[in-house]
Image (tube, rainbow, N blue to C red; front, side, top):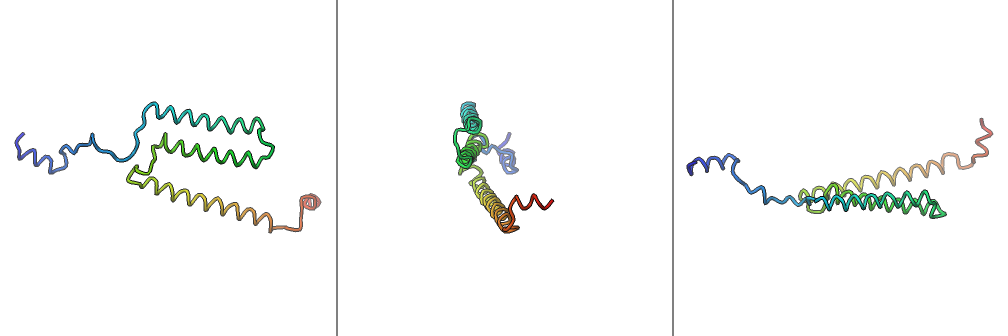
Length: 136
């Protein structure tokens, strides 16, 4: 191939751009990385199962808080080991999208709980379950 045709070839976007050395910031996992994520996911699933089935804590609210914490940890494990998300992947846009999603989820959940609590308290504050049974 002549020098002119090689230059024309590169000008049309078909030249070698060194794609082998391209690093988009995403971590590419190995079999060991996937196995680490899998083992962590299994452990983070077995612990809540044991806590609930074994009735380890007397208070159900304590159990629920621990389950929520372990669930949050498991979400992070899945994001790191299986979705390969980090602060550098996709130029930081994945992390920005994640933060936006978390803000929306927190606002939605907090707002829903606030509305449900206040509707429960304010709908019929003078009535209790005994009075409601006599209404039917």
